[in-house]
Image (tube, rainbow, N blue to C red; front, side, top):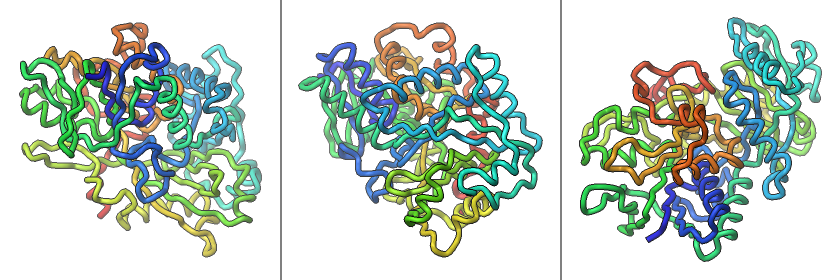
Length: 442
């Protein structure tokens, strides 16, 4: 029997395994994920389904919530200095383009100015934005746009490479004690007494046992937990769906030709209001745009209960409804219509699934039900947590070891009494709270 079983090898599971192993290399840990390791390159047909597996992710400290601005600065310091992962970090800067009626940029910049740090953000006129960076925003529509600012301290990371590097380092640090296991999680297994989690049963019938079980299963968490919750007859406020919901976004990727690689090479991350995010080309020349409106996926379980969950893995994440493609391409036509010219090839589309919480706080805590006291949660990325890969695991490790992370962190990451009862609220990443269902795009 292992000391710790970690379900999920995304940023939460990988970072947790890393910090547990740094603290005690002899700790017996198994990390399990549905994908082989190393995971295929993002964009491959068998690449990961979750939010952690991607060609790139944004790293920034631009937050309306000071708590996360501080956490982001902490993570950026590691991204900038770590021998393990700094090679994957690209400090391109970002430009945030604000819509009329939105005060998000003002709240972010006020936090920069009151945080006791040097405010390096700078106003950029819309005419300047069109002229800079080889004119990649030359044809951008400014209808309904009021202003823009540039933060040279933001950037992006080669996501799949960084996660793989940290997991490889963990396996090396814990050689003989830390294992990676490929398998599809079917359910959690109770001890025969009905008290405590024995481990996890896989789709092939294997049962992995551990003293402590950590759910780092992202958008799949509620679906995995539902059968156990039904068996224990848990009240709504102790079910995962009261805390996190699966949400998806769509991303489109262009395979740039040599001329376009040079044209877009110096562009920053571009945030166009509440509509979309454009990220600079990857080393392989893939430019990504994420349409910012997220969606749930209503799923009826065998019990008759309704939750939001990603489609079954057999339903390819690359099979995108035409209605959803149209919404995304309308945003592209508004911001960077040059990407729609005839000789610019769309390489692929992708659905990206994450778990989102009402205030977009992560959920890093022990399960509140006494019968599940050896079950720990580190989920709720809410489409903004990838940047915390270098640091988030130390906080989960503390929770597993019964150590407080401090009053503010403990409160923000705790199980919420009221959950989604009052609906999503303004928080760390409010624009990511889903308002529509995936079925509406078919």
